[in-house]
Length: 253
Ligand SMILES: Nc1ncnc2c1ncn2[C@@H]1O[C@H](COP(=O)(O)OP(=O)(O)OP(=O)(O)O)[C@@H](O)[C@H]1O
Ligand SMILES: [Mg+2]
Image (cartoon, rainbow, N blue to C red):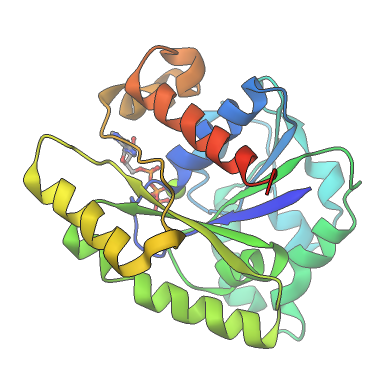
């Protein structure tokens, strides 16, 4: 079971779009995927049209609940979901200063049946608070979607610094699996330059796959569908399938 946190404290960088569509693309290739919505905005949960989430993932933080009891069928082939809800807003405050708060999610992931899912993808909120730290402590791999604008790259150093601290203190296994350039509009020179700059700075940490700006990706949440289903022939579907292939191909080496 490979475990990924999909994180970037910068809002609107493509975390949710990547969580849902990468999960669907992996599911399409016959893999079993568990998506955990760790964002109080619960965009992933809404995308899958889940309405009976209750307090969702808050249960493991507030009530010592079991994650397995929270798993729901997402409606997308091969993809299950642990939903979130706006109740999770209170979690940051509630957990601040609580002993062992950073390891709650990890202890829950450790208790999942090891053979049921091939991938766990955690959609993080746009903060570096205790929820995101929980994700970084729980997983082995970090996937960082970045919007292809110069401004969007500036937060990357801070995120990578947090990764260093988490690795030193709480999770020596954590590694940056990849930085994913999202919303790249190759028609503009600016976007091409930003991707180039990212590759120069971060080299092998950057996925070969790039997610292009694609209107179909922006549309599909309103229809409650992943891109592979909403428009399987779109550039967005091609890009997320390519990312799934790239991630699977890492397993051969
Ligand atoms: N490749 C793309 N092409 C076009 N639109 C995109 C693409 N990727 C994301 N978007 C749009 O950009 C917006 C932000 O994307 P998304 O919600 O995935 O980011 P996020 O990092 O999860 O945001 P937040 O920090 O609020 O959780 C959404 O409206 C989404 O539809
Ligand atoms: Mg999001």
